[in-house]
Length: 157
Image (cartoon, rainbow, N blue to C red; front, top):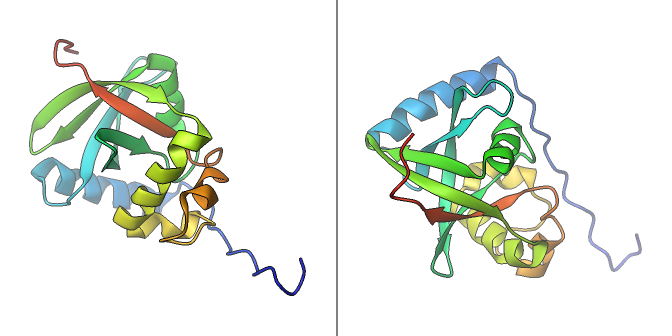
């Protein structure tokens, strides 16, 4: 690092624990009621057990598409979505089904920038500055998987 290079922002690491489980339980209830904007209850099939797993997530809209971002990296729901190729999103007691397509870093950059603007609670998990250029977020795309959502209204679980 030279004098012209700003120091890197420290980045938080996701650690699953009691506090996160409690936070997820509270957020899940609020999301089911539709109280939290941009948030949905994501349901995936467990890749080993086949059982349904649910987590609160923030969905962003960008460039005419809906996007699912993993701010904490390749956690369980990410691995389940990759394996199954589909997810369900629930809000206000309405469930919609989607196929998921993980996108390249180039496509993910602008989506991650939009995500950080919307989901302020996760900003500390990103090195790129909020409001920074998409290129900064492209560099982080490998750490934060991004999925394009395509509605699949004909599918039922």
